[in-house]
Image (cartoon, rainbow, N blue to C red; front, top):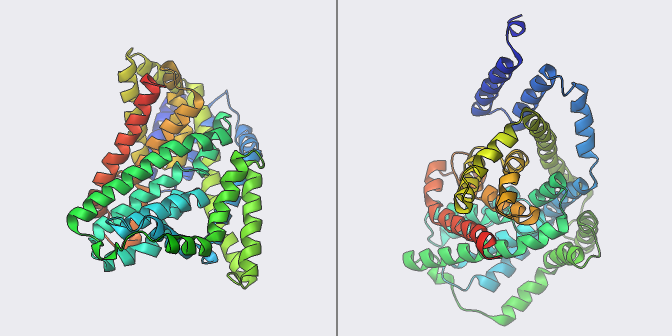
Length: 428
């Protein structure tokens, strides 16, 4: 009865206030988005309620989305089969001889796991469980060790094959293969900066200095042979895609068969229960991603229909200075990434800022990388900072203490991000 006395605009404002409250008290973001989208469709003449079901169907039948559960399954099989431990050993032999041995191993392992799983959350959790206790044993300060692992997990959004890049490609109609190729350079740049920061602080604080015996090519070869299944998985995933042999979906499917065949054949997986366990974990994560995608698309449609995207884009373009527009774009991305999960931020904020990005000459591929780099920085920026929450739970350390410890890595990643954006504005 009360709603009948309100105008459509007043109902939407009330719904927005309610959604903000629901978000702050911890309701899952896809339910918040779904509630707002339902209210908008119920009050809008442009979008009937039936559009919700139709939009869900249209989004879910997009073929590249089938790559997401397969990439997640690849990662879960890697962990279930014990291949992850072999990858950790290989990484340690390769780059662990520098100052800050285990810290560099954590960052390097994160980059490899990122290429296998495409998920920063899974990368952070896996590397945290595998290496945090060892870093503690080697004298690393607990908060520094946790911050190092959280920062390494950021690479999961950039280094291909990234699930977030797949979602961006589907949402914007951009070649996923081109996005994967574009992610290599910034991903390596971010990796080098993280390793450099850890090496500096480890040498300064004498972290892990007792575990830097020097490089041993023979040990690297032996460790590489033991990790051949994990390394082979990366070759299949990226080599097959970049060589044009497979689509991302086909590549992930072949990788699943490859891991299963070798893991079962070598006894790493000895029961069907282990396969089911890995598959169940993949379904759980997929059940989080897909509802978030479809409800975010509904919100995106609604905001576009209301003209909010055009208004925001025009406000940014109205600065009339390339560098000021660049700074405004980066600031909005970063702020949005600190309060929202990566997927809804990608699907809501990226379309709003795309016209402003195009105004200063960024094409969809470059814009995708700039946005994803900023979006990933949000993983270690309070108040949301997903990676900080994950590692603080694993390490049983207060969230704020980890957030303080990660600041040097955060500043380094932001510098790489801004540098990449500036280069693509004035140089390339």
